[in-house]
Length: 439
Image 1 (cartoon, one colour):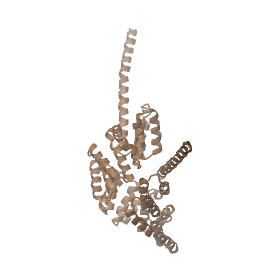
Image 2 (cartoon, rainbow, N blue to C red; image 1 turned 60 degrees about the vertical axis):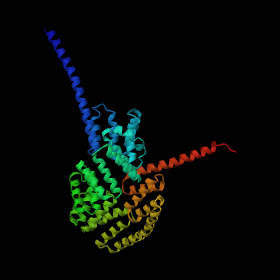
Image 3 (cartoon, rainbow, N blue to C red; image 1 turned 30 degrees about the vertical axis):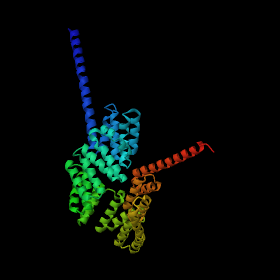
Image 4 (cartoon, rainbow, N blue to C red; image 1 turned 90 degrees about the vertical axis):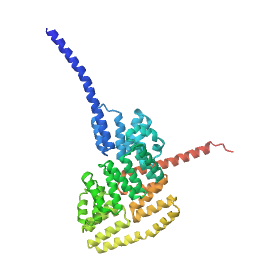
């Protein structure tokens, strides 16, 4: 009797084990799909790449380190602009993972967005197949690359293709708004950003761009409304300074100063935003803080006219008249560069293809009149002629002074590539001369 009981118990245990195995497999499959889909949603639709990476890393050991997730992580780092990590993951995938096009796609899209869209353009069809329903990522990098190159017709063509392939895509509407902003069609930009918000009301980028267009059109009350939404949902330093700018233009100086106090460390802000903080403190009679912030600006740009004027005005309010006059005198010397810049602008009207002239004018502006405006001209020259070392060196200098070391490193890498290409060209030329028969 006991042996029969044992045998039936063993049978039940075996059956239970057989039932548990598919149950465990089913649970594992459901978890795998949930992690992948939720991480993809964080990366592509919620603009939360950091959380996506954290989720993939946390679940990878339990899912036996799936190789497919390496590509998703590379995509997340691409959206964060972390080129070293993207390159490392791409190299790993190329060695043991998916097809060459899929393995290389995160790096190609990153390079395209930085202004080198050649690889994406040449492999557009296969890349759209790789990304499937997220093909907007491919087209966004292509549009951004063409805009960075200054190739507006190609950007417009890519946008038309995007709208044909993916109807009612909020990202397409967003980039249409960016394109209209770049071409200074502000009315069309407003319509595009408003459409992007209608399609995706939770997109903070579209709201921030819309607020900036409102500011440009001096529609400060509407800009304020958009910034208030952003302050509740994504209060980044750029949003805080933009909100303060809207309040300042509405004459609400005390409220603007109150908002700027929310910034943890203004010393790390880009110069235009830090100058706004300084100006707001001056308007609010906080001259000592304004003076300290003007000193930070002058440490970056010691000859920049607007920052010299801010420092002089701050010292004047503090009653330090003699020091204030010194800075006003230095500001006058920088002001004397303006006629030279105006002459260069007139020359560019008839010689728009002269990128060296554009670069030199940008350097003069960057050093003496308007650092942010000057670097804009240098960037245009760089996109038209990316192999000019002096242009790349000026961009390195600008981004290092602004504290954006990652972008500065990217331009240093470009300089090394140019120097290596020149060296290789010389070696090939010398070798050809050596190999050629002598008469």
